[in-house]
Length: 371
Ligand code: SF4
Image 1 (cartoon, protein in one colour):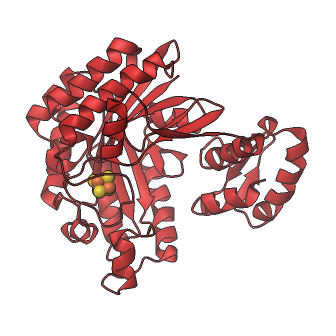
Image 2: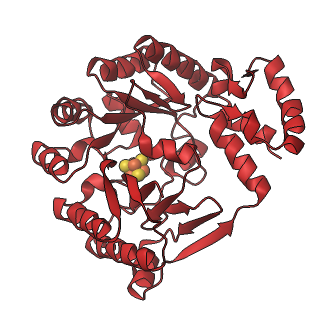
Image 3: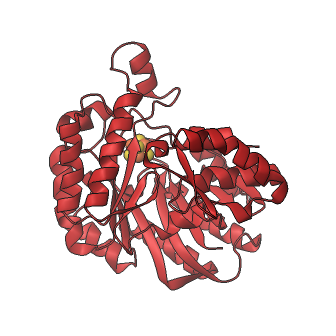
């Protein structure tokens, strides 16, 4: 087992585009943290932890920075009592700008957190209001000035393709990160997920829709600016300075096993995938009765192959042809042919990789290559 993911399902307010599992009421936070600690014990007794060192721990959400210092320490202590966290482990905490203070940064660092993932999204007030983020533009910039004094390993999230985000503003967002020396960026095209507040606001004409052409243009600009600034584009949405790739996310993309803790968290052991119930009260109740509430699926050979195609095509390495069995390889190359002809994919001796113009359509192309 290489990594552990811990889902903290609480947020101060609901961003309009978000379809993750979270609650804006913090009432159940203490009970949920206790349940996560108990899930660690249950997982250990059910041998869901494999022997060996844990290389990465990732507090995601939701908004993990909403946890009190003692709550993070409580979870880390519970983990350390049941598994070996390697001394060189990457321990990431997702944090929102409005939670970041000198006091919290000091405490996070002291307890062993060594990587921060900060949900900036934009440095412009009007974009943050449009997305219904909890923080403002001053907090976006000030938290980075502060965090870079405490942590070298920082990633920020930025969103492009937001109505009102001109190419000039997009450039300023990216340049602000570059100028502050942020070594890793995760950049996402704004997606309108079904049943989100954004979906409803667009359908009732209260918000402008998003346009794929604009998103594709801003993605091409992003690749150009970050490549010029020395960032490696190692996964469709992820850019890193040398030595700053996310080790936790890279292990997902290499198909390594991981354990997810907390409501809605997913786990994978190479052959099976399971996911905890996405409901805080049901999760707390089941754990208090000694049961981890999850559904499980055993992956078929075809599902594993399709998953490999989807994930690897998004990475800088691409699809390694020798990993595709002979019987599937012929069909794969036949299906890929039209994308090679329209210059969305190129083939090297051993790999199929996306071209820059193909990258924006990675998921659609991968789905078309599925068996
Ligand atoms: S802070 Fe993150 S998890 Fe919470 S609502 Fe916003 S996007 Fe979703």
